[in-house]
Amino acid sequence: MIVRHFLRWIQTASAGDRADATSALARAYLYSDLSVDDRAAAESAMVTLLDDPSPLVRRALADAFATAEDAPHSVLIGLLQDQPEIAGLVARHSPLLLDAELVDLVGSGEPLVQYAIAQRDDLPAPVCAAIAEVGCLEACLALVALDADIPAFSIDRIVERFGDDGDIREALFAREDLSPGARQALVVKLSSALSAFVTGREWLAADRADRIVREASEKATVVIAAGCGGEGLMPLVRHLRLSGQLTTGLVLRALLSGHVRLFEEALAELSGLGIRRAAGFVHDRRGAGFRALYDKAGLPLSAYPAFRAALDAWHDDGAGTFRGGDAQLRRRMVERVLTAYAPLAPTELDQLLALLRRFAAEAAREEARAFTRDLIAGNDALDDGDVEIPLVAAA
Image 1 (cartoon, rainbow, N blue to C red):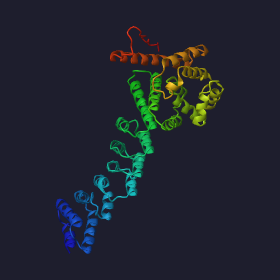
Image 2 (image 1 turned 180 degrees about the vertical axis):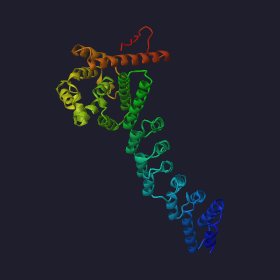
Image 3 (image 1 turned 30 degrees about the horizontal axis):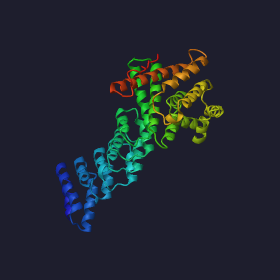
Image 4 (image 1 turned 90 degrees about the vertical axis):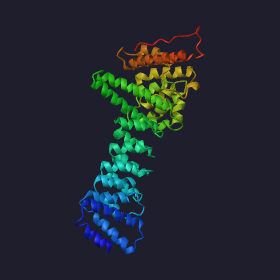
């Protein structure tokens, strides 16, 4: 009887009064001791209110039921089909929504609703994957910034879709669970953005900017690889191959940095051999095994003397000491390889020769910076009577 009077009254009441009455009816449904018949009648009335022309009325329903564990599902579904501001309120808070319903909402493509879902606590993996796949930029940013437990493949998808966005990169770089492959992909995205910026300002020619950025990305890749522990290196190397970044320059940089683990993994990935077999060939001092591995990896024949000289230098300088590797080029190794390769270069336009000269300059600068840091810090290992000042090689 009360619900009947209510339905008659709302036909002439103002929007504000209808919204207040709707809120009271919803609270009565949730918290009053209604009979079974009265609850059914109240639910029917609220389903009718989903068609009210005023968003104030429908918003009153959403405010009442968004966080309620006893909300009528029929009303929730109607609210989720309402305008984004109302649907987003329910999508953000309702504990009654199934994972499948959340995935469908994300797939609807409404940015405000996607953003609301991304802010939910403890999002399950399927919903995270849906946001990563089709969610808007704001939803993906909310997802990664709120430290949600996101599957690695979903993070990779966000990098692929929105890695060009600075806010996304910053939020992803701050995550402790970011995989080496995703971190390296973000570095490439950042490098590309910097290249586009400097060429757009006409500070550098496009080809020179691209070369600088590519070599900076390769250096950063070795830094990332040096931080990989356990089995983390193999997925990174596979990502590099699949993305076309496992180049001759990167593989040579890995070896000249003393990062032979990365060098071994790269040759194993390129050749299709297991890592143990590849490592055995790398350490074959007779040379036949390494040459066979090198050829199977498909690296340029012209670059073989440089790799052979680098590997010999690494063995001679104490292979066991530097097996883990780091990010810095080892100056003595680079200079030894440059000395061995320079007479073999067909012309002064040889690209590998030019690359080795840039490596030599880079190694000398890194050594000089390290020397300066130690000198300023008053490193006791530096004896004023026996200090060799490193000279920076010409680029």
